[in-house]
Length: 481
Ligand SMILES: Cc1cc2nc3c(=O)[nH]c(=O)nc-3n(C[C@H](O)[C@H](O)[C@H](O)COP(=O)(O)OP(=O)(O)OC[C@H]3O[C@@H](n4cnc5c(N)ncnc54)[C@H](O)[C@@H]3O)c2cc1C
Image 1 (cartoon, helix red, strand yellow):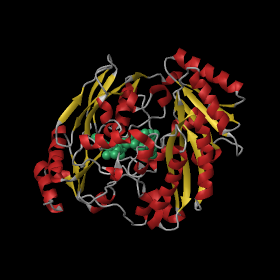
Image 2 (cartoon, helix red, strand yellow; image 1 turned 60 degrees about the vertical axis):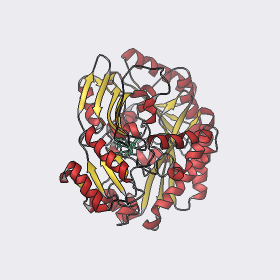
Image 3 (tube, rainbow, N blue to C red; image 1 turned 90 degrees about the vertical axis):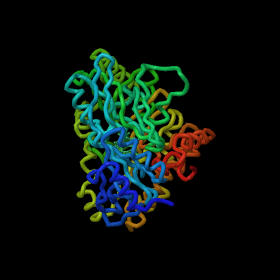
Image 4 (tube, protein in one colour; image 1 turned 180 degrees about the horizontal axis):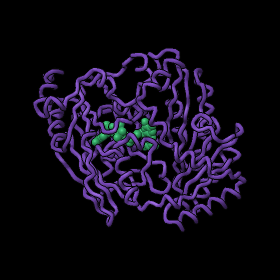
């Protein structure tokens, strides 16, 4: 027989002590990041409330709690910074606990010979980055959520930073990790520079959205930091299409600026609005970094390629503005002000990120914008920007605002736009419908299309790692478990 809510709370209290178990209704209602913030502003709570939030302070405690939950069929949502989107943290059943490790916040080692930093999973990225900067190093990882996100969540979402074109995503930065399996077994993937010993076991956990194991410790690469030699440049380009092509040429020629950003007018006006653009024009800017000679050479190449493409140089003022304000959105996150605003103007702003090869991305951009304009009656605006460039393609962040007439259907109205973006992207052979926020519970219905014939491996992986389906049920394979 299944344990009752009260029995579970009593058992967990016996394991860890009363002060670690949170049952406060307001906190339970806010267990799931900012998802559902619009409806919540109107007092509507649509996802099941977890039984409790359990605060853990060590891998042994994580192990004890997981063992208990695994034996009793209790779902567990791992949590660190609670900044995830896409319903990643939202409970799907009332038989759920949130396992919060933000108290596991010790930086364990900075190794400046082997260029690695080792942290417990609840170390805020900003704490690590600030410490490293003081010592002349950087993680190279600067997501917009830098002030919010913590190391475990960053690894579990396969996150990416705004300087990724030079440093890579977290998958390029992670060296090794420690994790607890659903049955309580503690495992460690050692930090070796590279190994050819079968499939890379780190990737059973990196990007797993809390669906395969609980990460307790991570080791990431660190880099020398040269902020004084940042090269910056901003340009007006005739169109998004020409912007994509100019970036492609720079990357294909072998240059790696750290920041590569291309905004259409709608997106730039909404988010920054400091550059005057005609409707069809786009704003593109770059930061190049690294040792001074490398930053300089990269900057010179950008100057050459942008001149050849008839881009209009507009200086560095707007790039500097972006560098200062790039994390400002975090101030609105979970804020009372944003919920007051929802009640006042009924407007909901959201973003959805996808990727595509250089040959598909232009079509994805134009066809998705057109489809949203055509199909979404309550659309206020839609735009997009690209911000992470690769040898073989680039991402797009679609940004949009919809007017919500009834908060009870806010989630469905948001989901409709997400669906259009995923459908348009997946029409293309190289379109990827999730660039970095994770599939969560919002986009997991596209997992079979995203993975194609290899989806069978995702289903088997979930079964193999988490046979009782206790780890964040609903992610990775949705209801296909
Ligand atoms: C304003 C804003 C800007 C953002 N910008 C970016 C961006 O630039 N790049 C980007 O990649 N993302 C961005 N995000 C999304 C989010 O910040 C990232 O997904 C981040 O990696 C989440 O980290 P977290 O510590 O907050 O994790 P949480 O929100 O706590 O959890 C995220 C996921 O990881 C799982 N998880 C958490 N901790 C663990 C653990 N210890 N073990 C196993 N699983 C775990 C959770 O179950 C959940 O599925 C942004 C979010 C906001 C609000």
